[in-house]
Length: 165
Image (cartoon, rainbow, N blue to C red; front, side):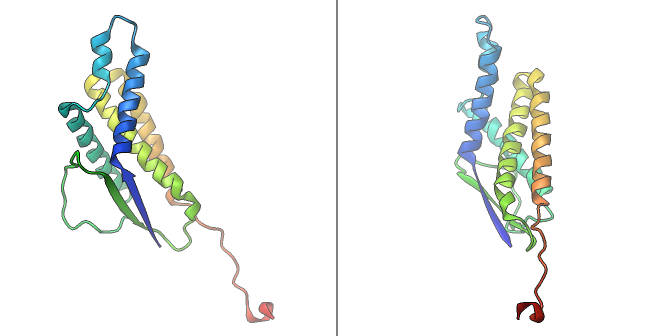
């Protein structure tokens, strides 16, 4: 069974910018404007380029994590994810007894991993004290992803001809 997952890049960027904004706002004491401003990711070219590199790095790690089930749909490698990229598709080849109820959990875990990983990379540059929290969140998301990938439907007993009659 093939499971197609589309991850919206604009949603990732929004979540990263929102988390860095909220973190910066919570650190504001009314006197540290510059420090707070530097914590917040935005669409300035330098900032957006860094975010896109971090998202690309996170996708690379997710692909390694999914290597056993990720289909080989890409024929060439590239370490860039351009700012015009709208979505990233992952196609997973899951076993027939995969419980599709876990699909939303897989999508959520991938999204949350990429956001937490990218936010941690952002804070490694701008505010190292917040890096550890987002690194832990990314690890937690990977654990959720691993668990969700292993969900299977309960086996059912095949009926024999005698039982059918």
